[in-house]
Image (cartoon, rainbow, N blue to C red; front, side, top):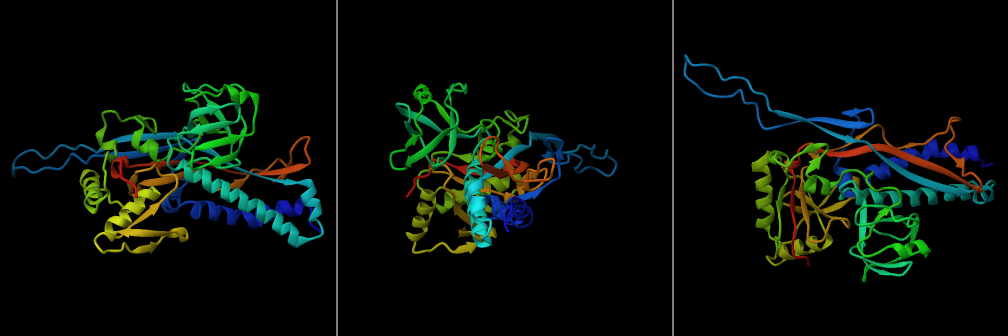
Length: 389
């Protein structure tokens, strides 16, 4: 007979490894290329000692002259807090009791919940990879009452999300929290939420974030390329810590990409091993090679993903990559620093499933404490303003 204890044990012993594998290796092609490490985790923070420049104790001289004086490479410490990443499932008491005498129905119940969790987590963690840690989903361009809004971009928005709105000064709009998105029109960038009077206070310019996530997401590529202060280090005058960028590229070409790759290698010694771009940029790149009667070869990546190949470098398209943008990365320079891999939150009694007070519903929560860090920002590149196909 299936019981609450049976469900608890199944989540612990069977589903945890499967979910961990899915979230780490199959959620996103870029994420699957990035290694994971528990090194450099100190308390609630990640502290990474990085070097830039070269050892200055090298030189040439006469037989009787002074030896070169020693001088170590420049060192500094990147510091960032571990981010709290959560994924929650719910199972109603009614559903649990209905499957009590049917193990097949019980397995289907858990499978459905876990697949839903994986889908939701994959979407959000993939989105975070391209953010700056603040968690901005989109900005309101037109407000149409207390439930309908036109946004500047809806790539990071999907039905079912629970969101909140902040003003342009990042102040919480009272009452405009825990609003559920019920519809997304990807042609007009219009979204519809469950109507509340408080949403009438949301004006043009308001910013939308996932519930409670403002400022608590991992530091993604936008932070690496745009933040003046990265991992606690002000790099305003530290050009050795700034990535390569080229704006207003226009028509994509082999020369534009190879020039960027050469510049990155010349400036940092880093070798680009992964290219990610928007869907339109990938189409434009394929069309460019097609115009020369050449087809770009394909290749298989970790996690079962497929990619095009540019001179042996995988090229993948990602829905969260900004339009007209291509990132040229060395994934060896990135690490997911984590306190541990995905774990279930357990109560004092060791139980995973807990009843929500006052409701006939049990809930279980996956948690991971981690931060994405790039130890060599100048080994990365970005092309923007590419004409899409």
